[in-house]
Amino acid sequence: MISVGRRFAAALTSGIAVAGTVYVATGLAFFTSNGAAAENLPAIAEYFLPMALVLFVTYSIVSALEIHRYWFTAAVVGLVLGMVSAIAGTALGIIATGAELNAEAFTFIVATLLGTNLIFVVVTIIAAVTVGRRVWNALTVVPAQPTQLIALVRAPSSQLGEGELTHLDRVPVDAELADSQWEGYVAALRANGFETIEVPAADELADSVFIEDTVVVFGEVAVLTSPGAESREAEIEAVRVSVTELGLELHEITQPGTLDGGDVLKVGSTVYVGRGGRTNAEGIRQLRAIVSPLGYSLIAVPVEKVLHLKSGVTALPDGTVIGYPDLVDNIDLYDRFLAVPEAEGAAVVVLSDDAVLMSSSAPKTAALIADLGYRVVTVDVSEFEKMEGCVTCLSVRIR
Image (tube, rainbow, N blue to C red):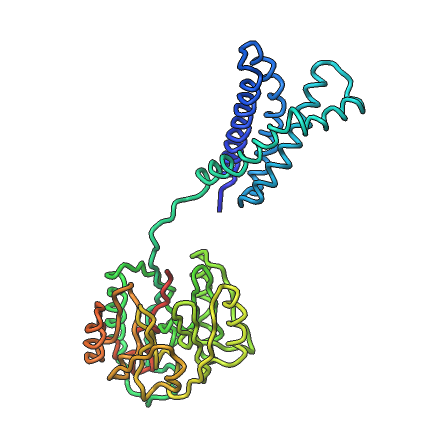
């Protein structure tokens, strides 16, 4: 967003640039068309000065309102302001001579639009489309900065082992080892260019480390989810605060809709959403209504064999969907599918165009992906895998 001071300065500068250009160009046109006689200069300068002053004021106002943003609106602005300035400026010139501004004078003023002042109107249109817009953009458009990689993370609860389970039998979880593995995971993100932002930990929320389920990000738009497990509903509020502080446009899935972020797989402009135990039809409908205007196509995918869609499939940087066939319900739904040899290898986090992060529990899959020309970073997340988690669950990546 442009600050008020910057907008004001840019508007005034644009006004000066347009009015000055029109004043000089129109004056020179009349000077040369009248034989370039030096004695004519004062009269020409005096005649067009009131018009230029009116143009400066009106164009500055238009600039501040950004009505001239597009070339065609700038052309309309030039036409309207050229005529207004020519009429008002000529009227001021007549008043300055002490003459009465009556019906006859007004008829004369209007007639000048097809005669003496026509060149002023034409030059104003050209200047508004070219000079005005270029000066405005030069003063207001901030050069694009390199894309900043951000990852939201949340430290594990000491009660991680008491979290929700759907497809796996419960086994003991080593909380201290989970803490150590989480720190290694965060360190791997940082080592690969991500700035990590920690959402405040919540020890009373056993599954809160799986932050991916709470929010899905589409460019500058963040969609807060509606967890399918009632025990996880309280995870949303702290994430809402962090997302708001990042300045993202906020949307939200509301009851009776349910949606877990682990069920959302983005592949280019296609969004696959798992319809399973945690995400229902209403949640998918609400997400479709949010992302369709953003240019995304949403494809609903039935999920029965795993907790979340991304427990069974994820995608490589080139868009190839990978998965462990025994855990994939509908392989034919994906345009390009690559089978991997280990269940733990189905989940990868895209770090860059040529690098992925994955679990060290899947060495055969790591070798397969490396053989495709990718740099593979592995981390130990075994304690989270006991709770049906994976590398994608532990962060929300924002690009």
